[in-house]
Image (tube, rainbow, N blue to C red; front, side, top):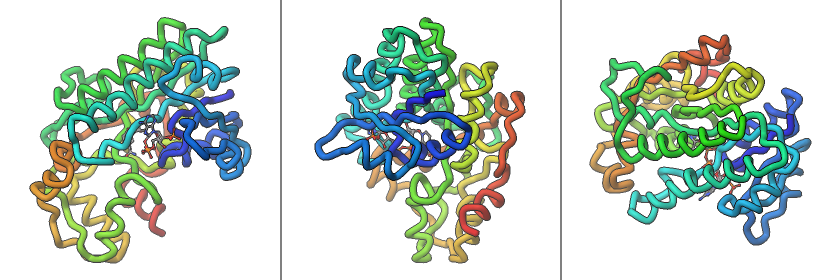
Length: 309
Ligand SMILES: NC(=O)c1ccc[n+]([C@@H]2O[C@H](COP(=O)([O-])OP(=O)(O)OC[C@H]3O[C@@H](n4cnc5c(N)ncnc54)[C@H](OP(=O)(O)O)[C@@H]3O)[C@@H](O)[C@H]2O)c1
């Protein structure tokens, strides 16, 4: 399939594209146009991938960028911890996901042939902060009410609108993605290497994580399996507490981890956004397991051993 990927230059996109190529797909990276940005530079970095410039908020531009594509993977979005949570930044976070997804879906419907499938990113934040022992699956209906939960609900609703044009829609409720060179571990690596890493707040919050390679593989899996639709929890089957992640990560780096990061310090840095780090939820990948997806890294120990051999 020719698969358009928005947000392809990001942490997940850069890992996904080689997996799409290996699976025999033709990835087309949609890059936001900006001065000096050259699709050729992206194509040279990932041989076999095509790249097109676009404006994610301009329907005609999105239409042109999607020409000839059979499937869309929608990963675009402003980094939620990219800045302190001011009112203006929260609006940017919403516009970069909801307005862009609405424009994408309108553009898809106006093509001569709407793409057969849309896999759109969402996040486990949709379940809201939870007690450690409470497990969430895709069947959980009492979703959260905080900023991130409402963001994800609106983001998923914008994606599901593509169903009216006959497109199969999958919303990937992505957990904390573990990989090198981006995401949570890239932020943790420096303090831990300096020996000043530690648990966040109480450390009791549950972190439902996934190895970035498994995430790429499950995206390829969901593209191929026409029986997968609706919400899909993109998390490994064995979530851990932040305390457990801290200990395992420090051990993987061979460094100590005895300096807890106080919740108040994070609040000073990120404002309300600190809740992303100080709260959590136990999320299980029920749909993926029912459909027979095989995780390569089911446990945190296996994932970290692969990432930090
Ligand atoms: N990483 C995680 O742990 C995690 C967890 C849960 C959910 N997710 C979701 O998965 C998606 C991909 O995550 P990621 O870690 O790969 O993110 P990332 O590294 O921050 O990359 C996101 C990409 O989105 C595009 N983008 C950035 N700001 C934008 C804006 N204002 N408007 C439109 N596009 C914008 C950029 O691509 P271009 O500039 O090339 O267009 C960027 O490379 C995100 O939507 C994220 O919320 C990630």
